[in-house]
Image (cartoon, rainbow, N blue to C red; front, side, top):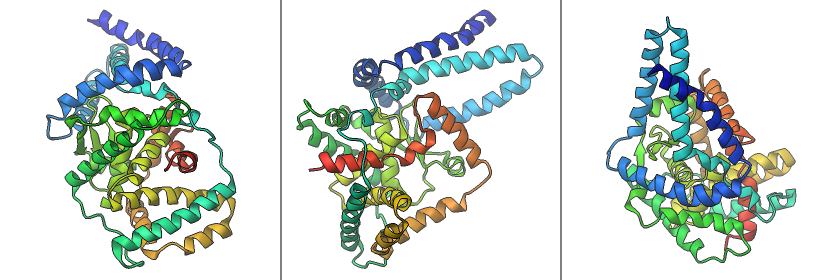
Length: 368
């Protein structure tokens, strides 16, 4: 048994080298893994986990964490054995992580597939102005009062159904598009592999919502069970973007930037005004943040033209996360940042807020 564990532990090295080799061939990963192998693995795992009414992935992580602590305690006096066993387990997890989802980190990035990833200050300013007009109008339709914040009236189950339906709509929209000259559209078509399938609705309430909140996470896709586990403590108004983001991960968009972008597209193409509103407010928040770097005076001018109720929505989310500030969150975020960088996400956790270039490009070339 010890010999087998040594082999498993040592296999971590060739596994890593093989992954690094294939990382230089994203076309191969895209064609063979992301568009074919991953489709079947994901469908198979969702078919199993959807039959379980609670988040089995949360239970798995909880058990793994507690068992790891127990195992370290009872083997602390045998450091060599413990060292081998730890790396044997890491090797097994690493293998199944990459097979079931992780190889998507090495597919062709969306920002390599767009016509022009760069944007100017003029582009940003123009889009921000148009976006504010659109959001103010949506806000007035939903509240009939520009000082009231929008309150999403749906429960978790209803939000799940709307989120899945949004992706079904998105798939139908882009399946009719010509892909010959647009890799971006070809990329968006990949949402079609998750339509017309009951196993899509694998969105679950996370039983680890308190730990997730203190770590600063709104939800996560479990790569081993393919459940989209949502932090149920976050403001209900955050749910549309969080669910859309996690579904994008399940489709195979691994980077946080891409998941935000695809989630945003699913929201603004929704037939539900609330979801359109939260999609556009997500984009506006990024626009304002970027505009402030270019021109603070223009930023303040744009800010003053936004309905007070919209600003109240932003303030609600800020205050929620501010209440859970703790010394451990930066440590967790730093670890996750390194994890992303190891998996070829160049900007690490900062990629969460870097989808603006994709949003501007999409609205310039594709949003018709």
